[in-house]
Length: 265
Length: 267
Image 1 (cartoon, each protein chain N blue to C red):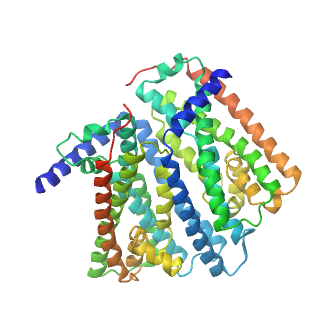
Image 2: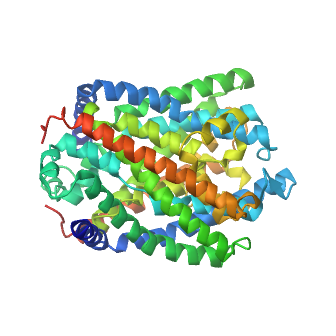
């Protein structure tokens, strides 16, 4: 188990180096992509700003608090896209062309190899934009952080990463079963996009769903609430649920893999 | 024309070969509608108003639902496919086909959208209708929407094709595609109704084609008061037609200019 994990970590680093080299081949595209990514990442906060200036906004949130929320969200999106951004495209491509079968012959579990091939350098655009927005809003809000707050932040970030890994594993399971579905990625994004809104503006039943069954609140809502000093105890249950979801996704993956009957070629 | 229809048929067979995938949208899209209903109910209640920027609650919920439908009617991969042809070295084979790349890509986009409309729009429209009936919708507004969305499809395809041509210079056009995506969603009105944008930005949107892909078709669907006159309908159709002709001419000119410089490599 330890040997497998350390082997997968080495594989991840190797993929990381490859991804950087690949990005450097089309330098112009990478640099424009990075610049554009920073600008495009600003769209979310811009839309929220427009919404807040044209209406009364969301209950319980001021404009600076919502900008902090957006900054945290962008930072999270940056982490997510940098660590795992390439997985969706590569798994779809591999299954479509029949290359996925090669993974079954490798000495590591196929899902581990897939998760280790997700590094995408262009994700740092969102990281930069998120850091800028967070820096700006924190300078206006002056939060007071304690040791517990830092612990909560670590739990929220780790829980968020595990939740995203669970969603990615489920995505890969669907792809190997259905083979071709061009807009599945967009559809999944449409659901996870609800994590882009503060969970407490939804009715209680939906808020409960967002901190338990589908704990999207770990991505933006809880880190922002922690920084604002108003996180509740449901953070722990959300983190716990993300681990359970990851376990479930691996079970689903194994079942789909058993029924996998190759495609493409 | 016969080859073009054959290409559509061939692509249709390819997309229909995997029907299970479409079933997923019937589960996911209604869930998204449900979340939107709760989200906007909460926002409208907090704002204590029946209208925000001229949209009542029902129209605002449907605005975002129809955004999904516009994607279903107009989405195509021409931009990414063209870059892939260059990167994989397939461009050479494409140039040897008995039909132009433009017509082949158009056939692919039409086939993709026929399957999208049949397997995504029709079932989802029925489910949405049952979940949150659109009291504002009339046969006339729906008919106008269909005419406007057909033109929006052509516009979206031509923009993507033009972006795809940029791959002849940059090889990998991911950056340009990202810019186009951002412009389409923000200045087209897919992220937020254009009525929320400041006046100067709305004027820029008026001078660009993107609002004729999303904002105008959606407004016709939700039967916005500004779209109820016949003259408004004709005006939008004419503007769309002008953009289509302009973009088609641009595609032809750029192709004629760049095809002489294309180097087929890769693999």
